Length: 368
Image 1 (spheres, rainbow, N blue to C red):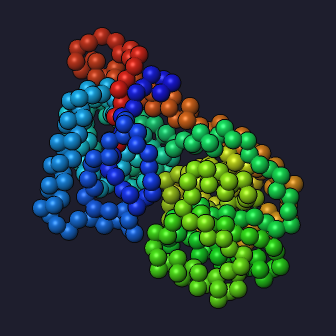
Image 2: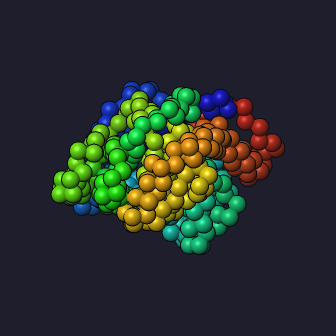
Image 3: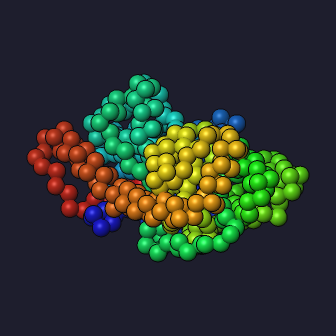
């Protein structure tokens, strides 16, 4: 907003994700062509899908007519379809589509050829993937998902000198996140006589997987070392990080970025990550965090043991992480990159329309 943008958000309403506010600038009238609840599923009724597609197009058309936006920031369209993107591009509106998954939003053959469109990537790894798939995006920017205000303004807590190592996990409870690898590491810590406590913040993506984790913990006698916190709001997450020494991010499959790693760093919590995908870009091993072997409980346990027995070095990593995360992943950093990209696209639009100049003092921006 400080750069002169007035934002209007067009999205869907998904009550299962938790409560949300009633901001008049947020329009939750779009209808998904399926659901993300308990895994991704698409509508089986083709007629209902056609109805929702037509309804979404009408709603978008109405918003575009009413606001006449000078810029659009587009997110994930997996359960909305690419026709909405075409509607915007057909109007010549400067548009940036942020790609935040380790997958292309559509095939190379469907890539928009208009010069008012550009992608922005959550990490260099996502960009590298799409280039390898044949997308002409070599000059498109990498815009990391920014840290929330609370993560950069609240003073981190570093005074956690207790005998017990305080470990955290934040994210969905699902197999691909490798939570079971962390549990295996906890069993090894128990065998080595290393005291710890593990706090888990996040919802169950698969109830069966969570049940398996609980059964394993009980079977191995580590259930008393675990705290299941469930989904936490922003205030709860701030408190969560302040009570940790380290955060383990043991994903088995490539992640586009690894937001929780950056959040942990910003709060003075040392991350231990498998480093698959874009998460590798956040951590410099031995400088601001530790990398471990994906899928190896022993590798995670070794990293945790090092943290427990090298408290002075751990504190140094924490200080380095705070400086790195708050400098590289701030809202100011990401907004500057987006602003620069929008102005380049606006210049293209002006040339296309035969106008001179592209100075924009205030833009109405749609985000969806």
